[in-house]
Length: 111
Image 1 (cartoon, rainbow, N blue to C red):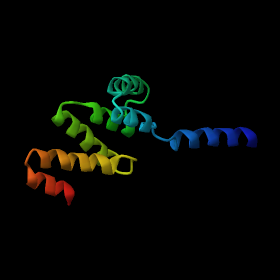
Image 2: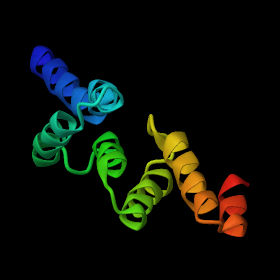
Image 3: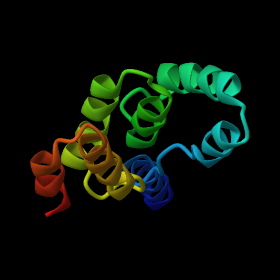
């Protein structure tokens, strides 16, 4: 009985503490010109881990629509503030508004 309890607790802890998807390879692909492959990988990841903050970050990176991309970044730093890419998402949002000349909004994000 103790053995079964240990297995059950182990399975629960694995599910609770499961790590986010590693998107570093896809980000490196994008840097080296492999955008199409990164997008293909993203589409697969969205089917298996659609709510993962790293998958959302990758989607924001490859999204060409600045407003949509900003909304995805905003979702990350608001809903997943401890995620691996929360700071990067906030910085990219700041950069987006700064590039548009919306300095007050950019300053709000900076603070």
